[in-house]
Image 1 (cartoon, rainbow, N blue to C red):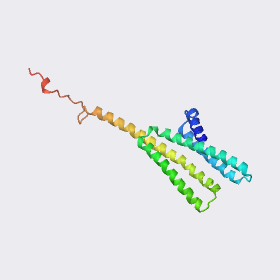
Image 2 (cartoon, rainbow, N blue to C red):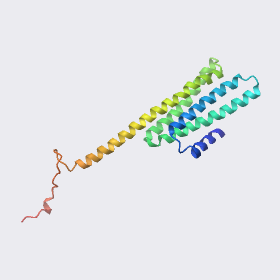
Image 3 (cartoon, rainbow, N blue to C red):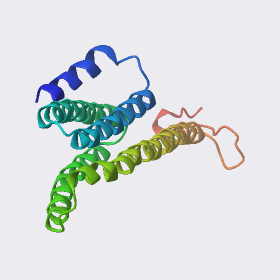
Image 4 (cartoon, one colour):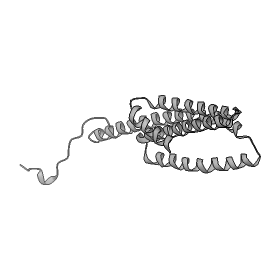
Length: 179
């Protein structure tokens, strides 16, 4: 909880001028570093020291996970609302899915320290997801701009005939004076 609040505070206070790409890359690599520290904490023979190293790694892991979440949510502000709801439903499903995976791994007695190693490439996938989202955003903004230009052209072309010449406005008969 402390690391989550700290992560939100850091992003909202100090990271507003940084690009989204920079924030995602740094928080992802910091999370990978935290998983490496967590792996190392299992290799320390002194239980007291290993506990404190794993606790610090877990705090960093939580802080940088919440930073990624805040950055993704703030990045989605330019997208339509259904993208935001899709992202949040994906977040909910990922919690359920990761719990089921953890229970499956626990049943086959896979050591936890190796789970930390497996999580490193899984965290690097976030970079590719963000890159994909950047491509979607660029396409969405381009399509939106094209649609706005098309609507403007349609409004302007309503007063033109099929040859592109200006139409003569038809006046109603009541306004026409007969001489």
